[in-house]
Structure formats: C-alpha cells, structure tokens
Length: 377
Image 1: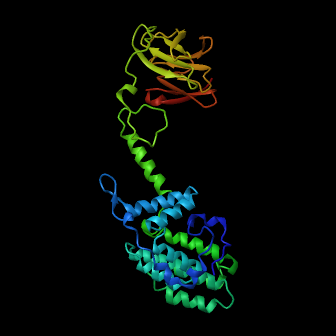
Image 2: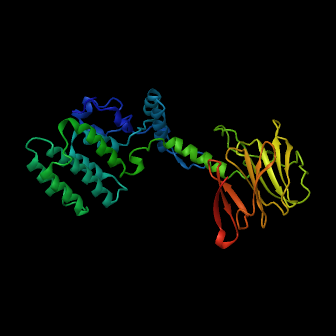
Image 3: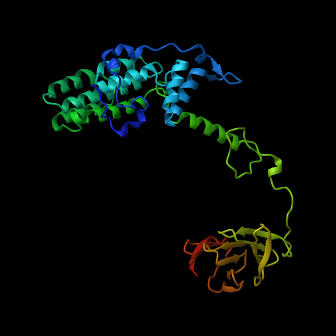
C-alpha cells in the first residue's frame, strides 16, 4: 500500500505524488493504469504558423509549467478539457509499480517502452532488481530469496560483472540492505534514477517551458546585431535593437593631448578616466554626473611616449609606463609623482598590473630574461 507518508524530498515527482499516494481504486485495479481518455480533437494536430509544434506535447509542457507555478486546479482543468495527461501511461505505470514493489511489472513496463536502447533497458532492469535484492537483504529470512534474485534476475543482465560481484558481497556484509522503514524513500530514489534512463517523452523534464522560452530569448539577443540595451527583455514582442541605439554622434571632444593617444582606461569605480599619449604625458579625467569629462590632472615627467596605464584596485594610485620608458607611480588626488622606477630596476618596463591589495605590482617587459617581475610599492 502506498501511503501519504512520502516526505518532501520526493518533490521531483510532483504532481504525480502530490498527496504521496495513488487512489485505492487504482491500486485495486492496476489495469486502469493503461486506460486513458482519448485526446479531444482540439488536442491533436500541430500549432504555430509553421506547424512545427505538436499540440499534445505543447499541452503537456503547459501542464508541467502550471503545476510548477502552483496552479494545480488550472492544470487539472486543462487536462480535463484537452484529454491530454501530463504523465504518460508509461510513467504512471512505472510510478505505481515501483512504489508498490511490483518488480516484474515494472521491468515489463520498461521493456515495452520504445526508443529505449537494449543497454538502457538492461541498466533500468538492474536498478529495479537491485532495489528488490536490497529490500530482501533488509528483511527477515530474505537471504535465500535475495540469492535467487541475484542469480536468476540480475546475473543474466548485460552488465559490468563488478556490479554483480558487489551485490554478492552484500549478501555477506548486508551492505546497503534496505530496512522496511526506508523502503518508500529508496523506491522513489530508484524511480528518479529510472527516469534518467527514459526518453524525455516518458516524463516532461522539470522547467521545460522556462528552458524553451529562455533559449529562444537568448538566441534573439545573440543574433541582435545592434544589441546595446541594459533593459530587461520583454516576452511580449521579439527583441530587436535598432541602429539608433548605438552611440553614433560625438557628444564631447577631449583635446588636451598634443599627439596620438595610445591607451585609455576607466578607474575601477568608474569615477575617472586615464589616458596616455605619444606626447609623453598621461591625463586623469574626472567624470561628471552628466557623463561629461573634465581634466583633473596632467601627469608630466616622462621623456618618452606613455603607452600603458594601470589603476590601483582602490583607485588611489595610477601607474604609467611605456616602451623604453621608466615606470611612474602617481597620486590620483594630487596628481603628484610618488615614485619613479628607473635605477631601481635594471630592465625596460612596458606594462604593469596591481595585486588586489594595492600594495604590490607586477611589471612586464619585452626583454626575454626579464619578462615578469614583482615589486612592493
């Protein structure tokens, strides 16, 4: 008898186990498992402008989504009107026979499922007979029946022999034996494992509608050539960005540099922009509330072009360097040079980066013998 003592860890089987039990009528008349009202005419055929969607499959996916959203009454009404059930007869049969301990009936149902490879059928049958075997080991006087199941049911299956040997050892050690009070939980675990071997049509995968919609939306975003919108995507219309959403007009020209600008980088907090130039200077720009920039500091002192800059993680310091040029450390607030690394390191520094604590740096060089070095600031 299947009781409503099934715990909340079996939620994966809802709504079939919504109350944790089948009706007494179903238990008394298991042949009804295979009796279904024929789908109404409205439930047959295809949907969509291209007729690519099977109507019955679509309804089953809707039913699963309604149950997952908590609209069980709406799901029941849809099942009644459409004549399409969420659960396939094969799943209903597997569910009933698994939880009732009708092992042979369970294996018979597995064998009747089309699109299931012989290897998958053997693996599924093994799960069923293994559960039966372990339950026998956990019962009084179950050793001899367990041995019979191992020899007559499990051993003939097309399995890796180590699996059979491990079960045989369990007859001596009672390893993994299932006591009576643990049977329902273990049977549901077995059923979930069985579903992992079944074709998806046997049981609609959880969250299938959400997955389909999210996949469609993601592909629209990926194919949006002009995508430049931080706004949430709406489901009410197809997503498409227009050329007008791409910045296409100049709103400000920064002309403080006197030669080519070779590198630009925003500060980590987004309050400043730093630029370096062939004119041997770097500039710190302050970002205003209206997103315009104003010159905060011009960093002078290099004698050769500045090709690289790096903000400290806390945005209080800025490093500047260039090919065949020294490395300088600048105070962001005052614009003063705090340190120049030239005589201290006998190498050409062409790039740099900060450690997360803002106290150490890594320097890169195009000289093979001095490619990377670290320094404490």
